[in-house]
Image 1 (tube, rainbow, N blue to C red):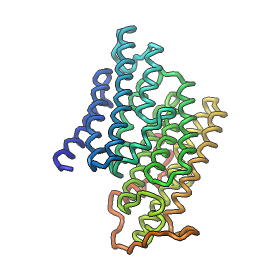
Image 2: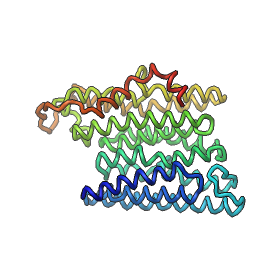
Image 3: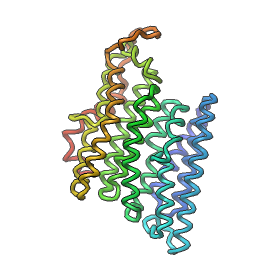
Image 4: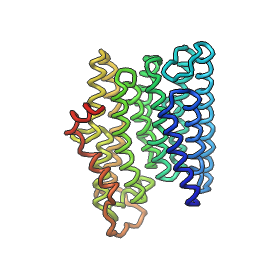
Length: 346
């Protein structure tokens, strides 16, 4: 891809996200989302592979539908209340339409079918952008209008996302699809608490972004796209593979790693809101995703499967952890003791 075109797309992504995050008017927020969509499309299709073109078309159609629903929701609200302010979403139909539109943009169940396919057709870095940066503007809109939305509907979407995100990731062999279902499961944890404690949603999203960025950058450096190649990648970079294992266990939410903090705080907040059955259900559903995280961690360490592999073992290289990956790996595994400070900050 032309470096100038890549620079323009990257700057457009940053600008579109900034416009949506900083705006109070529905039209400005919608404009930022459209800039984001148009900027990420060349990055998805840059390889010109048929799978990449298919992923681009799927992404464009789903995002266009979601953007049209957001525009229709804001117009309906403005027609009935005379308000274009994002925080003044009072019309019931507008609230329902906005919830559906944000669910489509985020890839929440039952609007999740496009997300794993688009990630599978993208490169590792583009998949990282789709899993982290592109989620921030819709989550911001959901945060700003969360007081007007239906708690029962959001809780249902969250539990279904945690269920299917863990369940459908069990039989996957492609790392990008596994991380896509991981993203859907984590979004369920964020959405379930967004009405009761929006700052906790932001904290969860920030930690999820750090951990997911670490995994994607590490897998891109090892050049692993499926589990069968991950089995023999430990001979190439043993230290990086050990770091990936710890980060995956952190994504699973195991103590004493960083990923345990948001799940612990969310369960605590749900219990305070007298939603103990909901907290129990979503905690049990996290065991589904724990299985494929453990399988990924098993494949990334120095353990060979019982069956023989058809791949040649790779020569060990002198590549060490680069500085960004090393910093992100440290943050992904060792922030749990700083929980009181993080709670105070957020």
